[in-house]
Image (tube, rainbow, N blue to C red; front, side, top):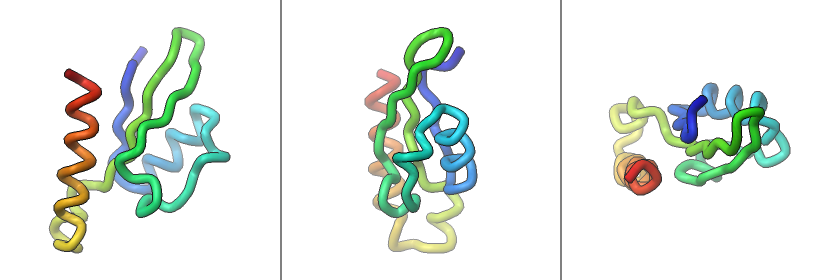
Length: 79
């Protein structure tokens, strides 16, 4: 019964968003990374945070700063 789900990368993002009925809001990860989506479940609301996979920092150094900003969004939700 998670309250927050953080997806790491585009494959988990697509899977989770489909599972939680958010397929109509699904776009490329470059367009929606760091965004927070809400969905209703049988046990209440769940927030889904779409994040770049950490490996992106190794392969595309230019996205490293965006990735860290996205993780700050997640941190603010948890606090």
